[in-house]
Image (cartoon, rainbow, N blue to C red; front, side, top):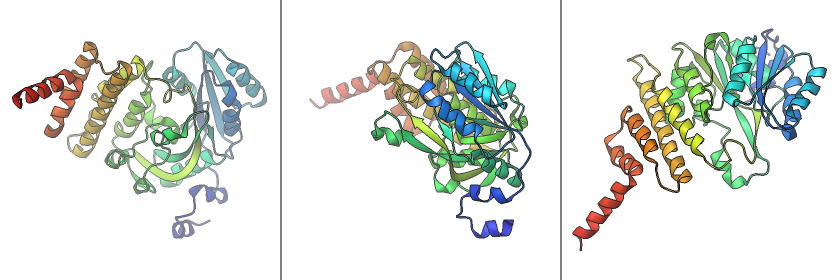
Length: 350
């Protein structure tokens, strides 16, 4: 269908248009890190091999699974010639994804978590937009569903961005700024497809959780001329289940993940004229530090270890803190000061 007709009906989902266009020949690399997901893995792999786009390489990296995940992968590989299986010792999702990136030869990269699954038209929709709009990445939405987890947690798991971000073909810096400003920044790497060669050296930070916060932010900010498209189409199905990173009980590694992310984000250098992006990045660094602080309180029942306080203070000191926030942050890191202040106030009014 002609572009003029497409523009006249912008309310129709983009994936309904691609079937009448000439499919781009570019190869897409689908990277799937796998670890102990036997009950869900077949559904994930089925969704990848049954896409309505043919030029795919599917790279599944088994991260030392101890269940039957590897056997499931091998059975699928026997039936599908475009599925590559690599088995490694357990090193975490970051290294599994990095292994996939090292093996990838496609023009585009798409990550899929092995307990989730794609809509059939996910890849063709993204490829069509990347080619037609000449952008470097396309962001889309997901359907979030709960599998053995209380749906009261729904507000903690978003799959859509606010409508103000949809339909934009804009600089990646601008998308980051607007996402932070609108409180709609979704960092999950399975919610976008990007051009591999434009970000050839980008890798996930190893052996931490919350690594997505760092990877996606670098993707948006480190290439000054990168451009993005953002669409409302729900191309991904995200399963929220027990014992995933986001639902498991908070531990020391969650705290360390936020602190490492903040530390690495502070290394991003932006042009001086890009003050809005710098302000948004500063805000996001502080958000990670505040999440580390809250996670620390949950993990240590309100008691903050000295070594964590030290790291928090040093990292907060490297950010620009609004005067009105200084006191709140100080009392959060050193709750004893708040108790002392309250005690002094009480004694003065006796």
